[in-house]
Image (cartoon, rainbow, N blue to C red; front, side):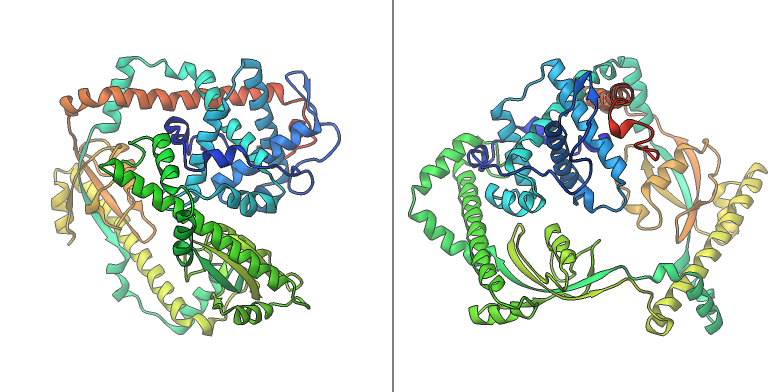
Length: 554
């Protein structure tokens, strides 16, 4: 969990006051999530720092963690079969530790800062910098999970508390000397001059002979690779935001719209939209954003009216969606069967669309409204398709293609391994890498210089991953060849000609920023080390960290 807490740390530094800040502060609150999900709902919750943990303390921390997990992993923790209940509960106690430690240190977060960061988080749910309206966020994102606006506000404060704790407990990590920073800079930025020989499976396909018996055996040996996951097919009615823009403009026109635009511009400041060059251009973007938010709210209202009519039809069945849609003059769309990992192929569905689709059952075949950044959806179950392995005859062409690629990859890797051994022996006898390659009928390629900090190397193409190339170069002495590096569909052999000197002028110019980034990274490492020790010390009196409660704990 700790490895991901800085994923959105830009929220902390930007402090952007989004257009939704005022409405966020006044969100209402409903009952907090008590039952279901992970963790305990009653009983002894243990002690942390000598303080007895109450049921409400635990519930608040659990709700905060649920929101954290959903924001970072795009699913609720109790929906992830790979997250054991014990691990989930241990993470909840980590959140409790943070809150109590912050209280001991006197760390406080102002209402203004919390609201600003919350507004920016909502912006991350939209597209093109457009925030999701707070009421839509609460209704469509929090309430279905038994969570409230108060839970989200506590999560925002918790997020900021973690940032403060990272700075406080990670302070030893900032202690780095200029000499150590310079050595690390040279390590990351010193470039390698290399030659490479690539062995691609595509060059060996013509050498592969496919027989019916071999293809059938290959299919049998790799049955698991052809298994289709659980899938679902749904029909849906879409209320697209584009259909409500004109209505939203008319609604704004009946208000003091320009005063609202001006107020938001003063709040955001002239630099909020870096791609615009004038105040009028920035205000135009604000107008567009406000109109779009109102249009999305109108779309949600229309979807709610439609849903009310749909759910009133008895008996409840999937065909009711088409019936009510026809009465309303609306179009029903149909997805192809899709898996939970990827969602529908026909359009870029929001994650809640896919999650909701997989929660539909024959007994409860209808759901919605489901709000996304560009539309609101009402869904009906068409069919559920369980996991299965297609018969050989159904995927015959795919099996033949996979077999040929598999065999060609083996041939490529065999030649690559033999060449590596030959190059090592012949270069020791005085030949150059290029001479050995040409004698073997291969074409050595000189790649552009690169370093560990290189982010892109277009000349590499799709023949290997850049990190594979870096690893091979960094671990191979100058004047030697690497071992054969397997890329999955072939591989390569690398010859390291030299390490080039670091450009001193560039190093001098970049050292201040590099040193700051290095201190930041070491600060995170120091914080993680503190947390590991602190958790083992202060959480041992909690149920989740007692050996009998978590025998498989990490």
